[in-house]
Amino acid sequence: MKVLVCIKRVVDSSSEVVLTDDGQAVDGRYAGFTTSAHEECAVELAVQIAAATGGTATVLTLGDADAVEQLRAALAVGCTAAVHVVADPQTFGPADVAREIAAVARDYDLVLLGNDAADSGDFQVGIRLAYELGWPVVNGVSTVSVDGTEVTASGAGPDGHETYRVPLPAVVTILEGGVEPRYPTVPGRMKAKKVEIEERQPTAEPVGPARVRLLLPPPTPSDVQVLGKGAEAAPAVVDLLEQLGVLAR
Amino acid sequence: MIIVLVETTPTGEAVEVSREALTFARELAAEGGGVPVDAIVVGEPSADLVTTLASYGVRTVHALTGEAFTAYAGAAWAAGIQGVRGSSVVVMAAGTPRGNEVMAHVAAREGVAMAANVLSFSGLAPFVVTRQVVGGAALEEMRLGDRPAVFTVAGHAVEATPAATPGPADVQVHAPEIGAADLVARVVSSEEPEPDLSGTLKSARVVVGAGRGAGSSDGFADLLELTELLDGSLGVSRVVTSLGWRPHHEQVGQTGSRISPDLYIPCGISGAIQHWAGCSSAKTILAINTDPDAPMVTKASYAVIGDLHEVVPAINAEIRRRRGA
Picture 1 (cartoon, rainbow over the protein chains, first blue to last red):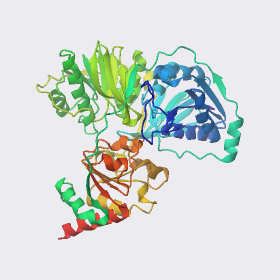
Picture 2 (cartoon, one colour):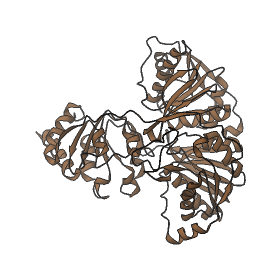
Picture 3 (cartoon, chains in turn yellow, orange):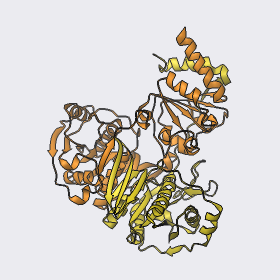
Picture 4 (tube, each protein chain N blue to C red):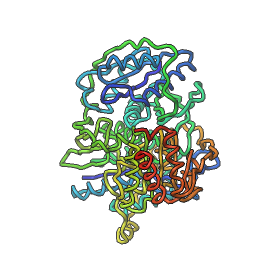
């Protein structure tokens, strides 16, 4: 079966966030770029499902020229083909992205995405994609397997560990935690370099993300009270625990 | 009118973030000149739930009932909401996994935009909201020009506050026909989570946090003892789960659990944005770290500068000493 996994190049948010001068995007010049954590797990699941079913895993992104880096990373861990919709992602809203993915996805049996992107956090591209395609969508699961024409997906929900079973074709959005993304091997990287990436143009002008501007939360000056250094601070810490009422028993 | 999806606990009470969403809705309704606020619940509401919703100023409680609502299906919930929303100008929910999912379904079906994790609004014409992006490290001002405006309210964006004057909270029970297509992706089985899974972490009064400073998978004994002494839960940073030292369900952060304890004690956690996104709602933070300039230390209310392997055993000993006395 044919699996399509969708990823997004995002600024690595492990360090301080800096905005571009026009306030329309997070500036990644200093922090560097990565793939959203949920999507790394989606890629791993796509590769596993392709192997288990004797199928293929294709990675797709909508992004500028530099997003090839993230496509190559997915190819290095087992995807065998890549589709690059070349566009400025800042000018595409979630409905635009869903429409562009739908233009490619109809040829596939299963589409995996992250539950939400680490940067824009819209929580909706996978669901909008499902409505574009007229397919069922399972949202926010961490394990996925395919048996014949049915996909079983499960994850933590408010009522406990929840399982869904839906017929293919289907859209599933992934949360980190169910699988461990593998590391690329040297032969994997070599192979990834040779894969020809299919470039596509967007099918329509984007409506846009309805963004007025991005801003940073106002800085809160540190008013930390240092209780002490090392083990000697223990009595002061326990005084505080008593004062906060968390020690009562 | 403004319509708010209210989520309930397994025992049928309105969850806190939904009460926060009702509070947000009331502020928005007041700004709009006294627009009524209605609630949507799934299943027959208990008398206690109706009383709670009345205290939050709710006019009508729409209860979605029937076979289609016995097991969760995001599309079915959205269809149910569409059926009762009438001429609502706003459809909203709390920014929970389910709230975000159901609102995304509503927005896709209505062909309108959706804003996730809204903190505040700054105008009605045009309707502009400010929401969390990059795990809360940045904010986005977004224009919601479509009607209905569809959005979710970020956890703890406002404090859940009952209304000055209670609402009538008249219950209307609906049992809508839901099309087969909207029931295809439906929960077929759910198992009770193990008691130590993230459910307790999310609701714990005290959380002891552990990061890279734990050193190895063997470095948690003192931290677990402190957790037990404080009757709390252990939460860890993403590094700790990535290295396989602790299971993923203990992870606090943008891709793990979001916690809001009375006290959070992050030990050996530097405080990357990914982690801060999950713990910033803690009322008080006591950081234990070797680096006085670590973001977690500068953002904390209290700090101890030192190695957690020296500080935590000393705290444990001091607690035992005082209890033993």
